[in-house]
Image 1 (cartoon, rainbow, N blue to C red):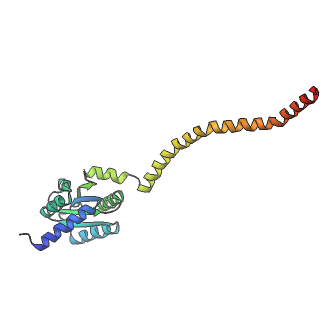
Image 2 (image 1 turned 60 degrees about the horizontal axis):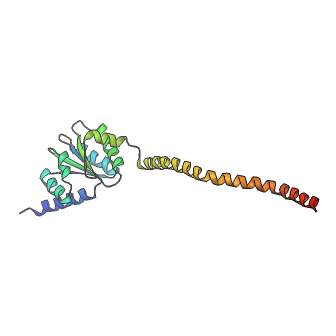
Image 3 (image 1 turned 120 degrees about the vertical axis):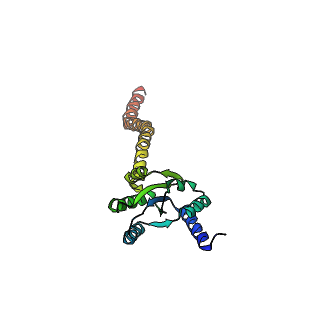
Length: 186
């Protein structure tokens, strides 16, 4: 029969896995307590939680959460960083820490929306521009063809308007000429 603290730990991990937009697995063997505290502090500032987990408990939680792919990036003593917001910003924060981290800190991989990412995939994720910039680029790319379409649809109407304006400009002279013709005929 499982001990209550292990059941609570599995439940907590399951809940975190279900909420997380990004879960990053890392090896931390050989890091000092001060280095681990610095890691926790820097990741917490970026909105990430890091948890040292037992692989057997993580396996149970991953199965219960419907995210068994997490186990593909777990090996040996494991720390999992959970991000609940923008996964790109979370990956950036982790990458920034990893650059100055002790050599014993190793990112093994991640799970993003059910997809397994290798460390090089995380580097590509970090290279993406921020979400607002991506949305602006997409909007700009959509706007250009739409503006062209509006211009094409508007052109015949403008041409008709210009023709009507030209006719209206000639109308007084036409009326006057017709009036003269009627006077001469009478």
